[in-house]
Amino acid sequence: MTIRVLSVTSEAVPLVKTGGLADVAGALPDALAPHGVEMTTLLPGYPAVLKALGKAKAIHAWDSLLGEPARLLAGKLGDHPLLVLDAPRLFQREGGPYVDPFGYDWGDNWRRYAAFGRAAADIAGGAVKKHGFDLVHAHDWQAGMALAYLRFAPFGGKALPSVMTIHNMAFQGYFGGDLFPLLDLPPQAWSMDGVEYHGGVGFLKAGMEAASAVTTVSPTYAREIRLPEFGMGLEGLIVSRGDRVRGIVNGIDTEQWNPQADTALKANFSARTLAKRAANKRALEQEFALEPGDGPLFVVISRLTWQKGMDVLLEAIDHLVGIGGRLALLGSGDAALETGFHQAAARHPGRVAVRIGYDEALSHRMQAGGDAILVPSRFEPCGLTQLYGLAYGCVPVVARTGGLADTVIDANLAATNAGVATGIQFTGVHWQALTEAISRAAALHRQPDLWQSLQRNGMKADFSWSRSGKAYADLYSELITEDR
Image (tube, rainbow, N blue to C red; front, side, top):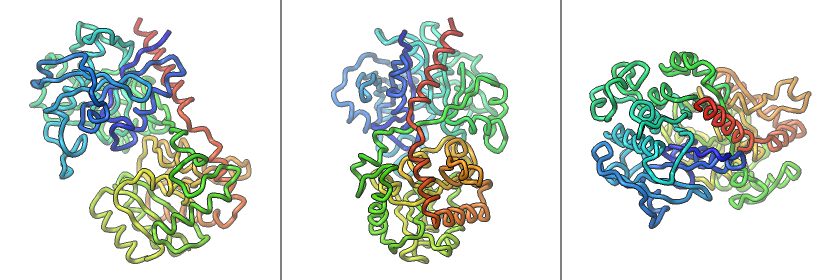
């Protein structure tokens, strides 16, 4: 029997991306298809999405979707069904999906994503002929209201089992309580076990309350968010949901991220032909105007934020250079951090180089040419950067948190003796812990046989979507069976 799932997400590759959510939402339909799941993805009609969709057929219309006219367009996401909510006044704007051209949140984000949720609930409830579903899978706060509408005001009275996936608890979609009357929800939705949260409306909280099950993108993060330091105020709700909270680690697209066939690289290579990898290191040194050398070349591909530990990395750069390392960094974020990294590059010409922004092809070249990738995150629900590093023989140096702890095996004595280590973990995101981890990496790099063992182990690990896809399919089947 085929399970029909409506995936409600504010972004999905290759159509629109601001972070890892897009990678996951874009990969899930392919990952689930072998397990008897037909996933239809619902996206907002941003300009880039509508452009890619072309002349699509409108299959439904709303005269007023929270006060705005809207149409539902049908298309394809790869080989899988795609639905797009075309609401021009809500989504056809210059700027990013969530922010204006100046980087500020759109003032009506509450209306935009509440309308998106209302539309999703209508579709799931049967408003669109020939588009029936067995389950709804909502991603992050932007889709959380879909599950609230399904619970409190389902179309035609039809509620479905549902999954709420938290990709990052730090982003919750919290808005003032004065907006509740504008959401077209019944009065009973304004309650502690509904959408109300500290006197306001919590979009993520509402989805977590309404969902049949809550998932996060790694088992360790699922445990961490039960604690105040990671739960961001919602730890009590997580604890109250008990075993309804699961952790399913993300996978990566092993066709897109394949060093044996990647056209962005100077030289292709595999775990058996690591010697060919040196050409990529030489090319990366040249591209970043770094001094060539055999010492460790560290890379960073990250948002430059406090969460990612970039402030601590900034403090550790002098140590990194002092022990013979070099650093190539690609990212953007906090203005003060961007300035700090530029100053570090000026202080260490030929040893530290910085590119502000994001470049997908360059990120591939950095993974293929760097010796080690630094990921000192204070919290990391799953993380994809370290998975790409493992696949490309770029040894991860990571904080022991969330998905980083679940996917990297520390090169301690037991793991190296057993021949299973894949990287370096450290505890506590502060100067001493990070500099000690960098020094460990440099010491291991001076032992070529051991270093190549780390690289080969990482490259042989299976981080494809096959195992995670089955875990999601099993969860869907469990929830649908319970609902009958």
